Length: 407
Ligand code: SF4
Image 1 (cartoon, rainbow, N blue to C red):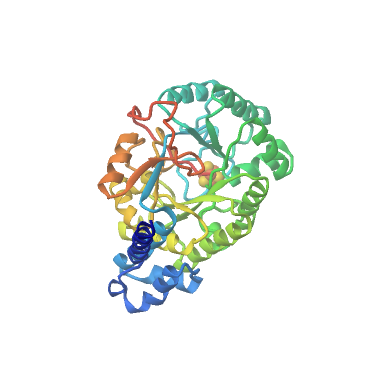
Image 2 (image 1 turned 90 degrees about the vertical axis):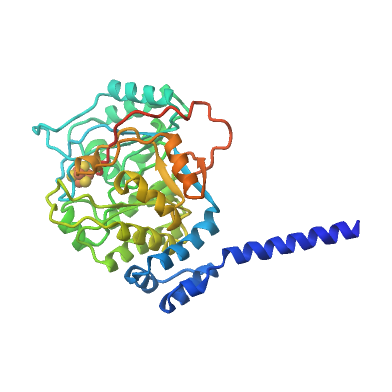
């Protein structure tokens, strides 16, 4: 008996040592100037804003990938998640005219649209038959839709399927609803929306937090403090949300780091962010069309630095709608552990010029994850692995369409 116990202990010790070594980086592959940062990451210590800036300034993409991959494997092992979801943009009519936005319209514009509650329910009913677990809804800051319209939409979606998770509204929409439509506090507005069916908030509208950048790309939009405050209130109510960054326009690297710092600080305070989703700016059809789109290297670098710096956010998503699936697949070696979802209809990025497909099938997402040497697993809206057999089919999402809108 004692021999068996000793053998078991030896195997356990060997496994622990093997696992520890596996988690260590090969420092010969890390340039000298980044080694102190790599050592902090190995020791699970937080990196500073100066460190993040050094990482952003590094051209050694492989080294960034190695460091980011260490964080990713510390947090998520070899898993890559995806969700079966359906995007809905209920309207693109908006009181603002953000310079980076090709989605918004005024009521008089030919491309303005406003979907009825019945029309939205029809689309979601079809998607439920295809196996979705989440509907993701955002729109413009509509000037005239009434409080009852939003509440009816949520209630009827919940009646359609009480298990369907309703992820909806950016912090910018919530503030618009509270101040101009519901005429209530942010807390009261969120409480009413939650009672009607709201499951979680989306992370859009953050852009880059720096005030000078906001003035240049989205003048008149809520400030960073206002965006953060809506999420803070939602988190203190027990709600969860994602957070985002729209980069690759007029911002500096220091302003990106400052954006990440503000997200990390709020996460230290509330712990309410489930994942981070950075988007590269799509300039093609916007008034900022002169801006050069972020290169593939820049997108991978941004993901890697975000993964390394945001040590308190568990998940990092590659948004295949803006990156394209091939680059999203590569990003699985640069810190990413989530490929977002099937989406089914995306408008915001596509109206800005994205040429990626509008949807992906679960089978395609699983295939590209496996090709990257990772293990695919379906998740729910809070990034929990869905381990029980889904009650709905998961293999039939094959139609075309997608949308990226903002608010
Ligand atoms: S980014 Fe959002 S708030 Fe700004 S114009 Fe577009 S829809 Fe409106």
